Length: 367
Image (cartoon, rainbow, N blue to C red; front, side, top):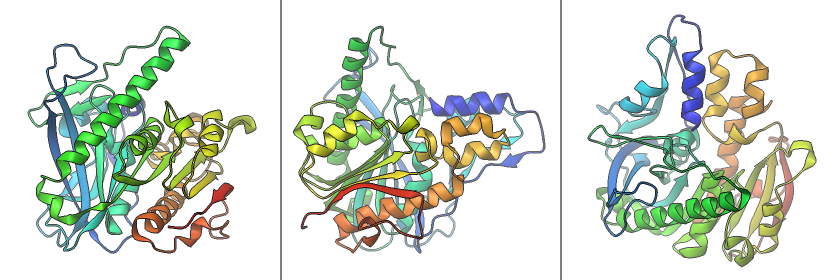
C-alpha cells in the first residue's frame, strides 16, 4: 500500500519542472543485472481471490553482471504500476534502478538471498538494499505476494491489486495475519523450488541461501526458516513475529534490526522470539528511524520537498541517505558472516563509524 501512499503525495504535489527521484548507487564493485519472471504454481488456487485457479507470482532476480553494455537500466516499477502511482502532471519522474535488464551474469556461483516486502507492499520497495547486495556478489530474489501487494503487473498487462479483506475483530485480525504469513511462506518455498530450473540457476549456490524482509517480510523470513531448512540465515527489518515460530524458535543465525522504539516500548514478539533463538543472533536498533526507514521510501519521500512534519512520522528523523548506507553495511555483514564465513566484525560490538546503531543483545555461536 506504500506505493499508493506515494501516489497520493505525488497527486497533491504542485506542478513544477520534472524532477527525477533517485536511489543511492550501489557500493560494490560488480555491475548489476536484473531479470523478471512470472511463476505459476499450478498445485494451488489463489488463496485471496476465489475463481483464480492457480497462484501467480512475479519475482525479480538481481545478480552480479559480467557486462552491462547495451543493456538498459530497469525502471523502479513496471509501466502499468507507474501510470497508477505517478500522475503525468506530478512534476516528478519515478526512479531508475541501477540494475541492467537481461545483462549477462558474472562467472561463478553466488549465495542466494530471498527478499519479502512489507504487508501490502511490492517487491520493489527494498531496491536500494537489494541492488547493493547484488553489487557485492549476491543473487537476490525479490518476491511480489500477489493480492497482498498493492499493485502487481503481469507480463500481459494485467494488474493484480490488494484483495485481503479488512478484519472486523482482534481475533479475526490475528487469524488473518497468520494466513498472510502462511501464504508468504508457501510462495517462498515454491519460488525456491523453481529457481533451480531457471536459466540463472547456474549462477546460484543453493547451499548458501538466506532470507530477509521488511515488516511482514521479516516475519516471513523467520516463518520460512522454520519450515524450510534450505534457508541458512535470516534477518528481520522492523517486523513483528507471527505464528508458531515464536515459540518454536530457530537453530540457525538470525538478526533483528529495529526502528527506534516509540516511547521506549519494544515489540513483545521480539523478546519472546529472542528467548527461543538458538543459533547466532543479533538485535540492533537504528536510532532516529521509523517503520518505513527500512524501505526505499526512506530516501524517496524526502525528495518530494515535503515539510519534515509530513515525512518524519513515516521515516523518522535520520537522514535518508545515511540510513540506507548503515542498513547496507549491517545487512551485508550479517550475510557475509553466515553465508560466506567472512568476519562480519561489525556484528561484534558498537562501531564508532556507525554510532546510530545501538546493540541491544548479541549471542554468537560457532559456525
